[in-house]
Length: 210
Length: 138
Image (tube, helix red, strand yellow):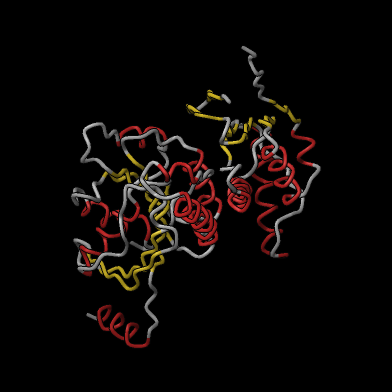
């Protein structure tokens, strides 16, 4: 009762801390689909557009004050930050295959490089991270390894989200085997499968005193 | 029919050469070589923050002829007294960063191996926990 009153008072005075939750990962692993799923589940609104063309998200997309409720009735306030996909290479020619004109492809590539830089800069400002990996692909990529190394060095808590488990060839166990020191939650952001488990994990691993 | 000779250039560089440079010039040195078409191999591994800076600087250099890099590093797990001293050195750097607000200009590379090359030539890197294989071609 007292805690509820305290939270109400903190909300009123704007003192209640929102957790800045960064959604990071390689390109096309389903970061925006996951951000949309979380936002839809708790606010009824989506955050960004999803596309099969790589680098659809080229600027950081935000959804502030998303309140999620855990099984023990505890509430967590999140600022969701859907990051552009991290990459070590961006070739405009790849976009031509999706029917983009040369001019559009070059523009997309330029914006994508700026997006990667912006996502890296944001590492200094996030409180916690969901590192999204495509469970149908090899998780041992340099992007994943460099990202996790940076989070460890900065002491930023992280959950590995093994996404796309709705697909037949998904192997979320492989992610657990490759990164045994991190909590791994298999989900399908597309269908919503296992999302409750992810919310509980956010409360357990990403929130101080959770 | 004249068959054009297609060549790949590899530079094997001692980690000592990279350690003599500060973080900025180290990344500049690597990117200049890679942008020139060289595949660079060194007997050391940069720390994760430096690797992220390398990705950031690569993105700044991407253009029509240079789509970026492929990079793979394997860090050797150092145990015993050496491992302890390594951790101590990392803590020292963190403390220095707290007091000065800056990273030290020159940092030793971790034990291991790193390969960095132009993405136009390196087609695929298959990585295992303790090895990697590279498929390159022109």
